[in-house]
Image 1 (cartoon, one colour):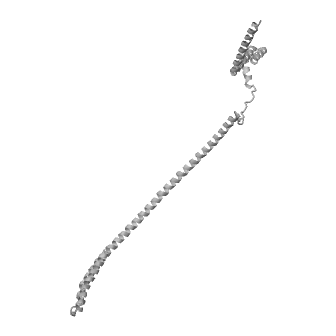
Image 2 (image 1 turned 30 degrees about the vertical axis):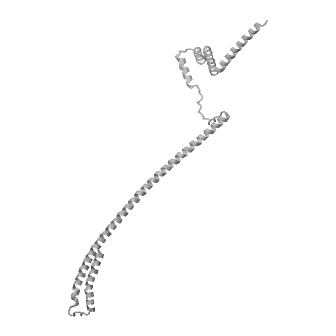
Image 3 (image 1 turned 120 degrees about the vertical axis):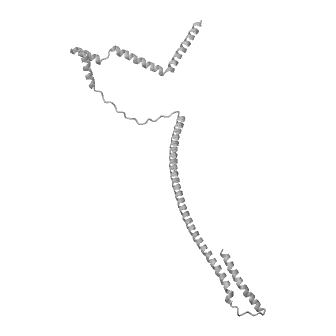
Length: 244
């Protein structure tokens, strides 16, 4: 727009200069200038055109100034919005980074814990493998017993309640004399011989059954040996009987 105004002003100046050039050319050809025509009359149209062009240019400059001011306001608003958006974006990025760092720290701790457990388990497996190799080479290995645990022993029985029970038993049987009391006391203390004999016999039979159950192969082997021996002796007797 400013270029258009400059072109108009230059065109007006050229139009004003054109009669002057024509007059100079005509004066050079021998014609004489009329001194009665004032020079101001020729300047009035030119001044009017210049004033009009300057007025239009001023209006354009005013519009351009207003546009520039509005543009500056819009630029400032855009800068403020950009700054707010930048701060908001930085806040979101920082929050996301903090969360990511926390998650990474947790994962690292969990991974380290799992690695520690794996290393411990591997060491235990190595020890078991070493023990198995030793057992395979030596044919067996002794298991080390742990420390003995001390179990509290019960207090020694002094027979405090037994006396009370004996008194009640004597009273229940209706003892009236000292001899009867002695007989009852002996019957309570001593076990009859028959019961002791039967009990000992049952214990011996139980021990014998346990021994036979624990050595069945030996029993069968002895039985086989006896059978083979008797068979061999019978064959020897037959051979001896057949001799002359």
